[in-house]
Image (cartoon, rainbow, N blue to C red; front, top):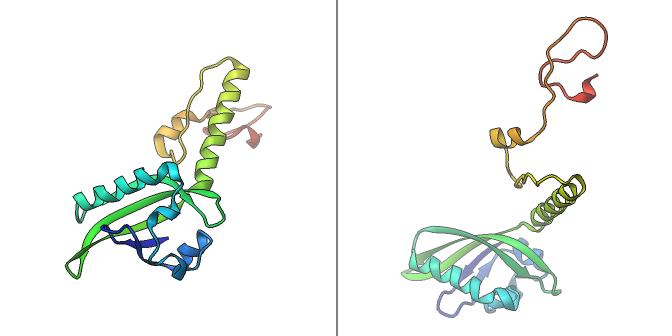
Length: 165
């Protein structure tokens, strides 16, 4: 979703058709409307503050996460990246929004599963954050390491999974 917002009136100057469709609108329905209609009441002040911070830091890119309100009243989570700039000597705020609703749901499901596992085993939780990768994630995963050995039984190389037998 791509928006251009007037920082004086906080009205939408332009929006791409795909982004409008993700929110249940046609782009011409949103042009000229106050940006507030796209946020739940509880998030409107925070949304305005984020956009005002962009104006204070003209030319710098900023990111934040907040909820957006679809035309049908349903709510999605969005990661927004905003940047205020001068266009024809007039300030505008450019905003790119990415729907992260599924990622938020997956993170919550992971937290719930970890809590249930910790409760069932009586062990403290080890949090794995969504998007964690590389060495830090590898340290949290259980690895089966066993060198090749002769004789009967399972033959596995180092780092083989238990299903390799």
